Length: 279
Image (cartoon, rainbow, N blue to C red; front, side, top):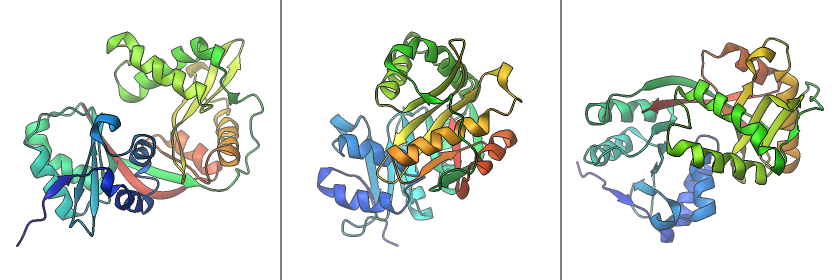
């Protein structure tokens, strides 16, 4: 059987790539945002877009940058991507995307790229296009530019708790602080402050024409169990739907039952399952 080769895509194939990403607007959101902002030229995009399928019938994509993200990757595409990537050193810090493709890729790459620090095989992907029935917390608002110093410790705590390593470990946290500052400046960071301290935070970490993807949801440990999360998330969803995108999406670890209950109360519905491999 003739094998369809994997190839690196360029700006001339941007429309085909965008059409493919439109078919999976939630799982492919991070890739779609990157391409909308920087195109497909690797020197601008800080990563590569690999394509699988004939030139006139692009079937699957794989983004290779800080993350490795397969999009609409069939079994044949996964095998082809893995054959290519197995011959390269691992530069990405994670593999993330639809669970079937991610886990199949990892099964083929683990022998040369392993070991992983953590594998999260079941992360429900949720989305909503409806204003939450839960009343919004009026104290949750967009973070102002002069409040980055107050937000940053909470962002570090969230990242460390969620990912398992501190974002300060690499370059003393300068790149992470730059990311937090960029989100604040773009009006994509939300928080509730009590006595000058962050007790809730969340960001629209990814924004496309199709969705605003929430990440970095965090409640200060001493405030957990007080029932503030649902109203806080409702405030974020309401603002994002009114101001940013026609849908709001996110993904959550399957074992995080309190968070899943909050998202259900805010109207989120299951639209797929992601998986993440962390290095």
